Image (cartoon, rainbow over all chains, first blue to last red; front, side, top):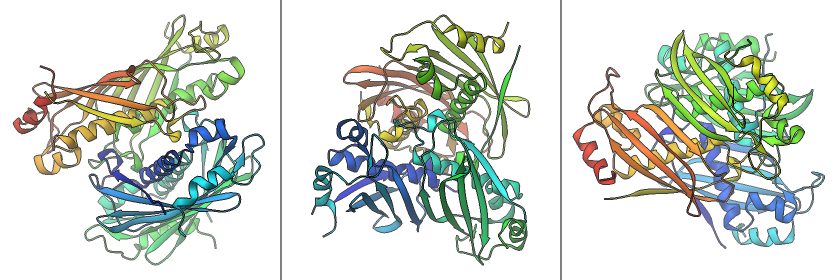
Length: 135
Length: 135
Length: 135
Length: 135
């Protein structure tokens, strides 16, 4: 089993008058983390439509924030994907010094580029993701 | 009962290569909508800490996206708050031409400014929110 | 002569640990202001490529920040366009309570959609912008 | 002489309907690059106010965009600082495959935390920056 982690250093420009990360900036980071994961498995979001004829629009996001994050904090974000027939879920756990800062998941559906109808996840994408799923 | 709505016009700079709104930009808008609501009831986020000694950090967000939004779309976002003893929930429904584009909710806890411990929602904030809750 | 102004209310989520607007959030607002202006003159950025066959990519931005902006401030941003043969410039003045908060300008070139080469600004766009220019 | 570079990978969520980076996202990256530079020299933006009693508000930004950037592009951004008595300038050159994508600079003034008046750049910050300046 492979695993995927991305470390986010909270920046001054991410922080609010209390010195903690604005939550829309946390969502930016979650999105960037998914983007980096898809690049790692060779299905970057910016290529799948052009080269493979489908998209993966987001249909659901659900997050819980447990601990405030401050500028300079290194937040280690792990991603564990799960495969449905026509959908894909990413589970996130973000830790600061080993303690959970936030958790959550996103669900994406596989949509045909031509008519935006849902379709099965292609076999090659399924094969690229499988090593990262929990057995 | 009072009600609260905010209309968001999706901008070119919110949109992706498919011409639809990037979802972090949708989250920005949700956050802005809560901000405008708090200003409307005279408890703007930027004053409650200084003038009232508490904060309302986000602990949970949960959203479902049903319909893509394109640049130029006017999205009408309604907010319905609910009051807990120490927490506050905002339920959102966003519509485009009367049809649901996305729904979801956020939960915030009331935290003392001094020690970040949770505390009861102050009576004056409770009174300001009550007219907007569903009976 | 017509004139164009947009009022931006600085939001909590725009502000930094000093309580003043992060400057990338100011740039977001400038961009949104240009977007609203183009919509007002019936050449929204999201339509010009599809309906008119050209784009207006940014080639230059130059801003000076004179006064900090805080959450809750209403910032009145005026836009005055000027027309070149193949380019377009927007001059901005942003005021808070009548005093200048920031000024600056952006230059965009008119680019053919097909080959990204520069081209003359079309006559109909020129006619739509002219009433807003300074005589 | 030391030099400083940061590589930005353009993400899907940075891109517009033409597939190129929205310019407010480029400004986010410039700001992040300055933030990483200040961390490298041990004067991170998030500490200077608390530990050193001053801030470095932006007073000027001036950028030229020469080449569109697409999702997946690795943009190498160099920063060269210059020191004034009470101000600091960062010059940026961003390259994609060795060719200039954008250039520009930002000017910041040194402001006392207590009364926001300008003051001389402290000697220890000056010493930390000097190795990165052009001789």
